[in-house]
Image (cartoon, rainbow, N blue to C red):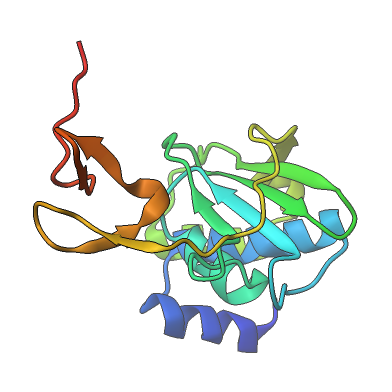
Length: 172
């Protein structure tokens, strides 16, 4: 493991933990599998199925971020990440193997950082189609609260343009 990259991830995340260690190893696995390095723009896309610690390593080490639009979140509660290399067309879904051992937090982190990658992850076909490139949308104003929102997120209610917070959904 590259200690400098680990330290960058810890600085971004705020502390050392087994989840961050798993994220660092996840990035290593993805780089080997998809034959790539850190994305400067949107060459690599990640759809994360959890909002847990490994996602911070994905941002630091792979260059997938919410701001660039190449890190998306689709909550399934699984420690699974769908990666797409726009340059080569390759894609892979990486799933963390279930953690079976009875270890302390420190032991688990050390084990994750040193275990063979195949003991940590399995791969499957991606579960989502490759997202389109990030777009910039016109800002519109909610006629109820006055806050701006991206046009594609606006709803029409009682003849007024409203945001998702103000919108009263009708689900029967």
